Amino acid sequence: DWTMAAYRREMIDKIRRQVGDGKVICGLSGGVDSAVAAVLIHEAIGEQLTCVFVDHGLMRAGEAEQVVGLFRDHYNIPLVHVDAADLFLGALAGVSDPETKRKTIGKLFIEVFEAEAKKVGGAEFLAQGTLYPDVIESVSFSGGPSVTIKSHHNVGGLPERMHMALVEPLRELFKDEVRALGRELGLPEAFVGRHPFPGPGLAIRVPGDITRDKLDILRKADTIYLDEIRKAGLYDKIWQAFAVLLPVRTVGVMGDYRTYDHVCALRAVTSVDGMTADFFPFDMGFLGRAATRIINEVNGINRVVYDVTSKPPGTIEWE
Ligand code: XMP
Image 1 (cartoon, rainbow, N blue to C red):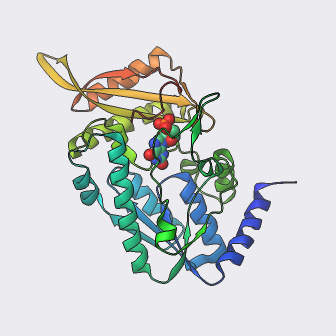
Image 2 (cartoon, rainbow, N blue to C red; image 1 turned 30 degrees about the vertical axis):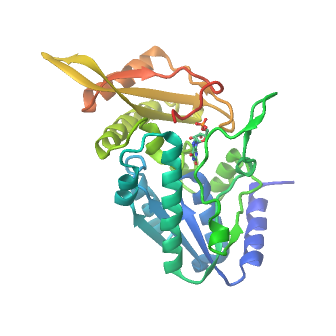
Image 3 (cartoon, protein in one colour; image 1 turned 180 degrees about the vertical axis):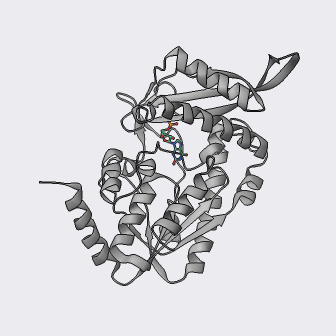
């Protein structure tokens, strides 16, 4: 009889056998997968684990603080928090092509992570929250050729470069199983039930070039949207929901004034694994409330639209 409690014990044994008394470094992304991997490994080998959180400045509001709070303060897991926002935003200045954004972020991420891992010193193992679907590298549509749609940024190539062996305790699991394991490990529900968040973060939710101003505007809109979704009791019915700040400005009217501000697109989809997705059928009352709040509370946005594209033919993210 296969249960998560049994899987947890089995994995802890396996990690101990693999690692011995060696040191392990685990990159945290702020997402569920790396968090579950880190807590499981910490349970297995304790202080032999150091976590590294590279903050690229493209996280949602309050997210970096949550990661630090959970790992350093709650779990007492040694955590290196690298604030690399200036570095990443500097390198991204003027970059508007989606794949160039991903490559720029991926390359910098590896450089920063590698430098921090060296500082920890003597680690032979690199832990990753790789899931079973990540092991299948390309996306294949039924009947069509196997094609890679977007180059997902991860730490691929890093272990060989750093001569490190991989520790991947989630390799056999699907997302819902990782969540079950997270609950089994006592991770807070707010963390375990989180929607997936892409490695390049908000960079791919600001189509066109990225500025700090745009990121600030997007963070405010995104926070309000998710707040309304939680209040409506819909968060757990949705696979991913987020706001996108469009590089288009349109005319509006506010009191006696004409405004000329950004358009914000709202996205919400249901999905099992992210490979295909349907747009979420909000009722118009909900959309109206979210739009009104965003326009009233966020300076820089004067129009809100809802994306009714499913995948395929669309993708979940806009870039
Ligand atoms: P798309 O947009 O390809 O997204 O339909 C499918 C799932 O993958 C996430 N995504 C990414 N995750 N790096 C990641 O780690 C990326 O570059 C990336 N691009 C998309 C997306 O959020 C969705 O869950």
